[in-house]
Amino acid sequence: MTAYHVLEKRFGRLGALQEASGVLQWDSAVLMPEGGAAARAEQLATVKVVCHEILTDAAMGDLLDGASAQNDLDDWQRANLREMRRAWLHATAVPGDLVDAASRAASACEQVWPACSAISRHFCPVSSPRRSIARRRRRRRASRAAHSRSSSSALAGSG
Image 1 (spheres, rainbow, N blue to C red):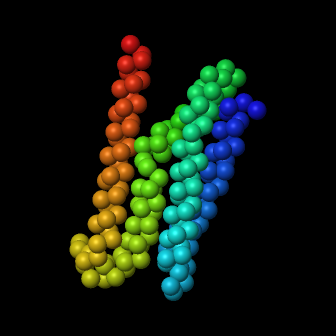
Image 2: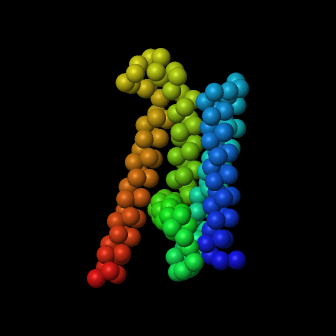
């Protein structure tokens, strides 16, 4: 089995998990039973961390390099490979504990938001939204730093 086919299988499994996460998220927003928020937050965080672990697996970089070296890929597969590498770069820029914390904070925000929006559109006295925003900013900074490093490496190697 070629490196590209291994990646196809891994990303297929990843896609199924991300779709399951979307269903859990939808269910949380639309059909959440009374008292079910903590369990749903745990489920969502677990699925998101597992997705992150699949993307940041130690073998992923080698598989991407191996697939890039393959000469038998068509244009569609090369485009898929670019997207796989982009997803991998983004995931490796963010630590798993931050993925977990961000998921839990987002779930907490979704639970308090109705109460906050009933009080004011611009102010929420609950700290969960502020923590969530801080985590998202931390995640963006980590991602930017990683992309900056990878861009600098690519430019240094192309000269």
